[in-house]
Image (tube, rainbow, N blue to C red; front, side):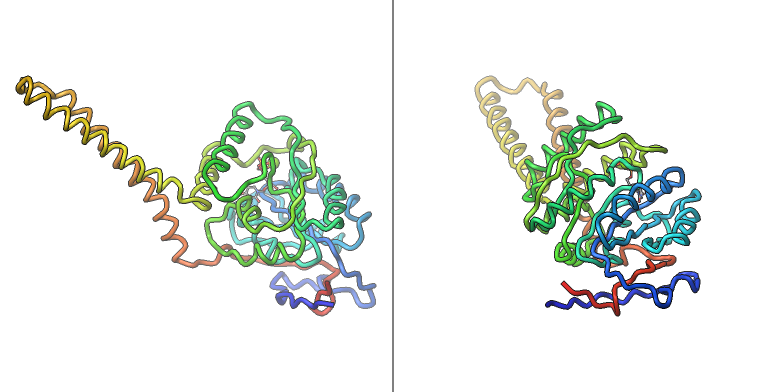
Length: 346
Ligand code: UDP
Ligand code: MG
């Protein structure tokens, strides 16, 4: 039997006595740990939790870690209320909004168990799919990702841009991203450990999930429209996520910039040759202003584009060298049913 040492879970929360495991409560080692990044989900979170509970109770020992990503509505107090009545809940409260990718990372850092499930709080990822994920994990797969059969309640533009992005990533990168797959997935403990070891501050989680590899399987499901509220992703955020995805996983654009440079230089050389021949044969009528402008503008544009691409990468190098912590935790409330004495048996 392999014993894995877990990180010490230090409770820096408001110190409520009820956080401590009630004396004499039967020890239930939870096997499944659900991670839910939550940002301004006050309207739907209770409904989410009750649906999650009915699914998870049937699966054995479990805990859910809600990562409150700096919500500005009542989400935190609702989560605390839920926590008061349900020992399965652990609560990580981040010091501000860090974004979903970082919130998931925080959840993974606080997770423990034999398998970890990442799911959105807005009920677009139906908790009812979790049993099929668990079944596939029990067959021996390390990563079981939920793949959308179709997108309901999403605009044509979003569907098209999403498809285009996956195509582009497939064409450019070394890492193959599964199509129509969000962050909703189950990971075995060794996969979680592998992902935890990746500490880059520019995080594109779908890419990191794919990068670690391990035997994987897709489970198909219908993605529901958002239960309440609106998506926090606008097109500007999605565009930035796409750039993150590309620049984190491939240096292809840098290569493209060099190829563009070579191509432009070649064209320029041919053009110069043509000019020389033309001047020798027909003399120089001192026109040429349009061609001059065309060349200057084209070269200027190509240079700016290339500089921009280099800048994107340089900016990321700059951010990585700062080695800041990925997130700051304002408070942590553990679940009632912690793993016995910080040791986990495989
Ligand atoms: N989310 C988060 N931080 C953010 C934005 C979103 O933790 O800054 C959470 C949100 O509460 C939800 C999940 O990430 O549980 C997915 O967010 P959303 O539904 O807005 O994204 P979409 O489904 O449109 O990809
Ligand atoms: Mg959503």
